[in-house]
Image 1: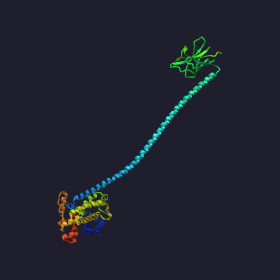
Image 2: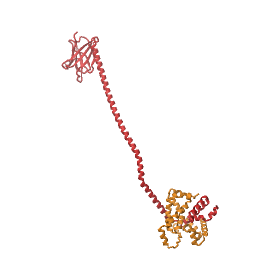
Image 3: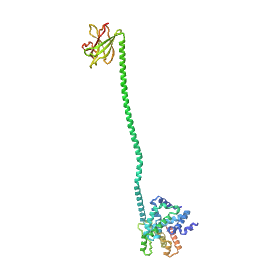
Image 4: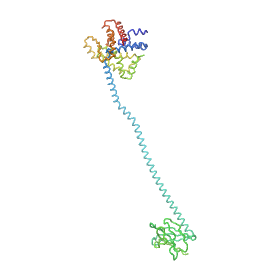
Length: 272
Length: 176
């Protein structure tokens, strides 16, 4: 194809003037696609004509464009409003997605709180039981300890009772406490004196029981103060001819002179 | 191979961008109005149709297929169809009847309103074109006359009209 001849034929002007049929226009397009010269010529022609139209006030009124753009804006606005009208469905979907997590988290939280309360209650109960057991254990231990002590006292008293070296004197209650009684073991070899506090009333506050050895024609001899709570105690060493032992109530710390009218129990040695 | 402005408009149309319409109006508006006026022979009505064509182009931009021809070819087809559709309306028929068969020659007189210095200079340059050449350019590209109509009006053979139009444009291009 002779391109210059093609261009010179005036077909491109006819193309831009709208003179050609649709088929003829497509043919020009095909040639322009294949021959760059034709494309350039076509563009150049069009630009020259547009410029001429602008200068000669042949260009279409700007109001035509404004009118079209207004119409487009209106259509876009309607589309936007339609989208907004459809929005609730989307919102519902979004809301549906979020609560799935919220509900699941809430359920887990409540289950967790429930288990926490349950475990805490069990823990507290177990702790109380443990404290109670510890208390029982202490109480039991104390009782065992007491029992052990009483057993030791009992064994000691039996030992004193059984010992052939001991002289056993049973002291019976007098007028102040007729139910009271106590026992004294006096070792003949060592002259040691033991008292077994069997049944004496609790001494009033600030007072204490005191054992006395009674010899003929003499004032009672101090054989020692003793602790009312201890069953068997070793007291002082007493020598000489003793006829009787007696327990008086004295002020705390004991007294050098027996308060005879406060004698609770008294027992005489058997005459051998 | 297509021109860069056609490519740009093609892309913008594909994404329904309003800028495509502005570019079509700037680069093809005159030519499309001419195509429409060739059918309707009525300036005001042609302008209305051009406005509706711009809207159609924006709405149907996704139908434009560069493989089937250039953008201008598609624009011309849409414009011609819109103009032909217009001829079938009652509005068009009433207008035609009011003209009562009288041929209306609508050569718009150029009234320089807010022209700046540059366009005044360009106007002076174009004024160098002989009156006949300006008339041929106006009739063929801006006033909707077919070549045959020009032949009849100027009483010239078709070949002469085509040659004179081509000469006029060559002259125009040497000026601007």
